[in-house]
Length: 273
Image 1 (cartoon, rainbow, N blue to C red):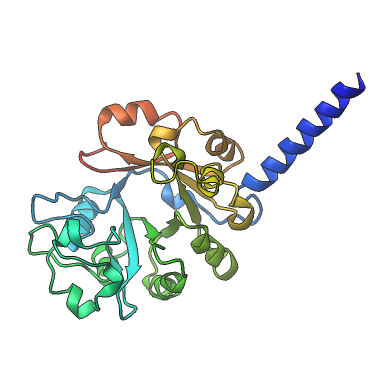
Image 2 (cartoon, rainbow, N blue to C red; image 1 turned 90 degrees about the horizontal axis):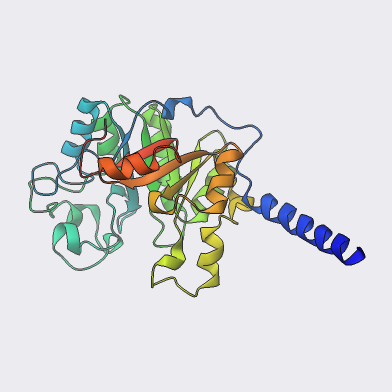
């Protein structure tokens, strides 16, 4: 009997510790209602085979015209200008070697996106194109683990005045917002990393997969790979009040499978109605 009591006490203590690690923000939570009621076009309503490639001004304008919210990516150029671009490297979208942060803005502006006439927009240009007409999810890219992009992005968003939230895979961005802008809705991006060969066997990414950094970030929403909807921490966070965002839905079938497990949906490759 005593052994059973000890086991029960140990399990209870471990469960309480685990919950304390993954708890989302509960108190002083900002209003998140502006995010509800619409779907979010991943990198704009884009077509990389046309004149509206991903993360371009034309793709953002198309999303606004269709009434979609927008998810976009922000990182810094070599001269510390916030630009909208997803990959660390320029090869896939611009056909040149090197990382975004190896090029000044003037140099980046000489490149073309996916063979179109569109150029890499600054974050300021993207915000002007969206013009406060739809909510945006701003993903900060922290391939270089420093928060300068958060500081400079925040300055632009302060002047913008439209509805937005921020998200990032790296907890540092959420920690920066928790400290400096607690009034802004913040989200943790995640997936089950161990399914990817690159991260398999790395205990840090195993812990990240189960959202244990929430103790430092206290996110308002969890944006999780829709294929990993069964993740225990993700499901518990939803029960504890965090909005649950699915990325990235690419077909009606994927939406059908995910719709009961998530609250919001980021999509591309088709139009999600």
